[in-house]
Image 1 (cartoon, helix red, strand yellow):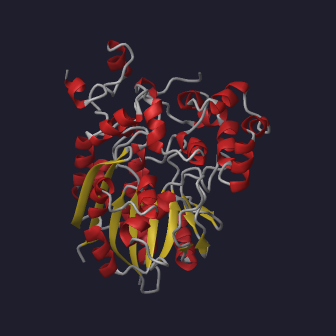
Image 2 (cartoon, rainbow over the protein chains, first blue to last red; image 1 turned 60 degrees about the vertical axis):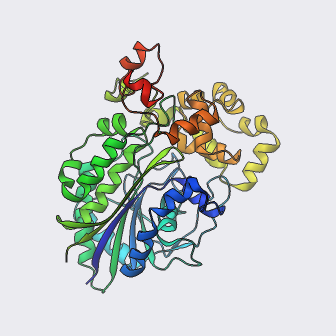
Length: 280
Length: 144
């Protein structure tokens, strides 16, 4: 049966991708960010996932204002890299796992989570920056990736509670897949940041650190956080943090925190990163 | 405009809800068209002519031509769509954030290096009203 090895949370700041792509990762400003992922690269090399289920948000790249799915699942065999305005990032194309994705879609929809099935989709920095942080700059990504984009662009995103519950349904879906696959789930975005208007630049480290703490020990508390609280306390874009709850829902109630990193700033954003493992 | 929302009392913040998505539909879709290299070239060659190909309001077009980011947000623009425009200009999120907050690039970068804009003093509109509509900019003045 497929097995969930662990979960990763990480911010997905586009400037981190640009720093790596433009050979600036050794500069003092960026080195402080990348150093926080040195352990993580070792960890994922050892964890050797066959598939990553990657929860992220599309930033007006695949989905325009024409169609705005709240939860979608990438079921394609491959996903091209989006051109976000400066040309596509120079990273390998993303290879999907259509069989597992179809199984997940069927399982969670019958479990009353009505995902949108997507068979053609470009993927943007929201998905590729986390892969770059965990794997560096390989010629090909070493595993398959199932993208799970969540709408956090047009308000309201799904609630934290709904995200946490979806995670639990995904867990059931993955664990009922008959092939022996090692699966790692990523929940990306956050932490506190606001990119727009006169309040841009907002950072709330105290809130972020508490959030990191509760991810391991009390995800139930995080699942009760309202959108209003996230907007006010973590900035208009900090609301992306709801996506972390999807990842957390796929793991056991009790988990081991094997890595934690927090750093301000990467461009406009507080970078938060966790690696959690199921105990057995 | 429209019904009141619980998030209306957050200062300096425009929540991009479904109503704003309607208001800014053509502005945002124009921005998204810049994801294609040939469209970027056409826009750069003659911005006004390219904009006239879109059923945007004149105000929206003027805001784009002036790269008035706060105005574009006020007219229904969303930052992730506007990103296609400033990426086409070879500018970053941080460059545009500095402009939207009325700071120089250096001042804004320095604020971020010092831990960002603090949440204290920046949660409610009434907190800004006391200071004549200004944000708390530094950790020091948020405690003052």
